[in-house]
Image 1: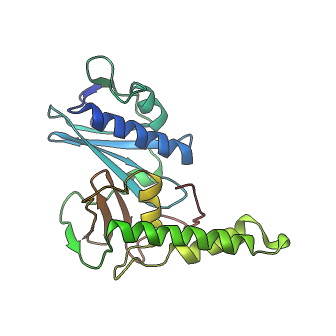
Image 2: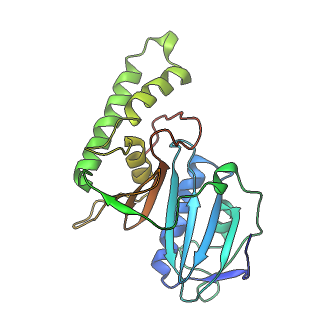
Length: 231
């Protein structure tokens, strides 16, 4: 664990605001969420794992100074270190919380390099349409369950069927798109670029506001139990 500094200065207050929003969304799914922070060069990568999706979410922010940081902290405490409007106190500085014992996923991060773009990913508008159709299907199938079968186990079976479907002509499961939308990474704006990258057994859905990473077929991040969340 490398923690040579106890505070961070962000290069752009808007990126700090996006980081605060990202942390808030993580905490929506897990009030005790932890995040792993890695800084290299002039950027800080923040890794989190929303349990409903079984993926890793990555938000990167620019730093005006070069830091060497690798530490796991409480997502809630990091959010508290940011001002309510997304800027930091004082003068663009956020104090790092004390390290916490990292959850198992924090020791299994995607590779830093070797990423190559993969073809077959639909555009942002088509991704959002596919996601809306999947959410509607989940709700319809859930509503059609007999009362005696309307339980978590049955809903997990429906979710497993829907969210494990592949996106376009790729190996990316639909749950990765659902995670990107729910965490604020998949936004409706003109010229919004998305890309699918691969490195070894890892897949990564990249947008300008963050990335969703997961192991490819057979890799996994643990037991899959996907249910529909609020996008």
